[in-house]
Image 1 (cartoon, rainbow, N blue to C red):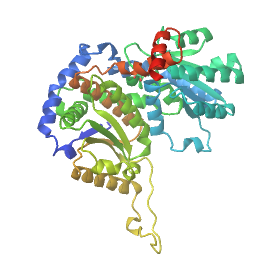
Image 2: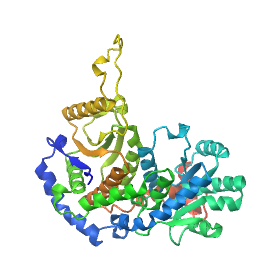
Image 3: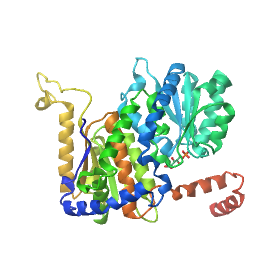
Image 4: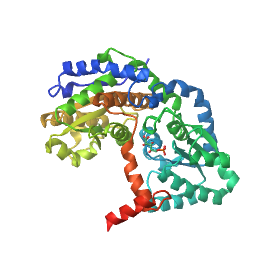
Length: 447
Ligand code: PA5
């Protein structure tokens, strides 16, 4: 049996005591219970708690579809934004070869669209797609989100002109609601193959549904193992009333106690660039789930050691409003040692024969000690290695902790009412039918 990821609170010990963390974690068992019983805020959106059990039945179909896309094309464009984009991006970037797009061997590229409205991005993408034999996965739960809808219109038009309408329909897969939304209508009209996003799972909790699993499978990664990791973490954390042995409860409790010590900013830290988009996924999960009613911990992220040469200065000596959560990966997948040099002109022979990971771990330990000295508490999530299984564990661990943490803060961790504000203004400024009056008022304001 594989060991599980774990949480280490030692480097937060002089800021919050282990007794108070344990006490809050133990009190938070009631939040786990209300999640399971469906009695807490937003209980219509807790399907992700056990969906890894249901998705097993869809793995074959997802893998078959992925195989089809890989056989008819060399590139897949994944269209989506927010929760319909970040999970797949996080896992694919985290587990693929860092320079996969430059590898000469036969390789299937995954490109993303619909996560912005930048004209230059889309023009550059179309230029690349002109020379590619590509497929499309379009993902939108509501089926009406503006950014992916615009991207899909442009890319669909391009693909249909390139390969014809029938061929295009064979290469477009829609992941959306079972019955409503413009994307569902388009899919039915054009006969696209579709996967359903369950009603009871919101975007940012959907990476282990076809939303994340289909693009991840097309990228050639092992989705069964990802789901197994989530299952393993669910076994450890979902119903575990012994808070000390429940990493999600301990993390949720520790971060809320650190907030209470006057630290409203949490920085997720990775010591590998492979975790960059995992941090983006985490920021969306926590930012959208907790940031409401004037509450919440602001989620930020850094990639070390890269950012030790930029934000590291602020973290060490700036305003003391921060704490860090470090994802600490024990073993890298690959091996590399630093060579010995005859004349030692760069004075690095003291490192000769050492693995890069040894140097990286020393950087990590040195950073923790320095940041502790600078009054920054550090929570550590210890991960044996970065593979599909542990990625699945991390996803479930953070999702469960996020829901519990939202309940500790007394907010609904499953809605995002604040996201509507910019949309209303944008629609009004663009004269969307139904927004004429609001448009007039805004234009007055802008004079
Ligand atoms: O977490 C969420 O619910 C959001 O971030 C959504 O995922 C995002 O707004 C995209 O929505 P949709 O999938 O409906 O296009």
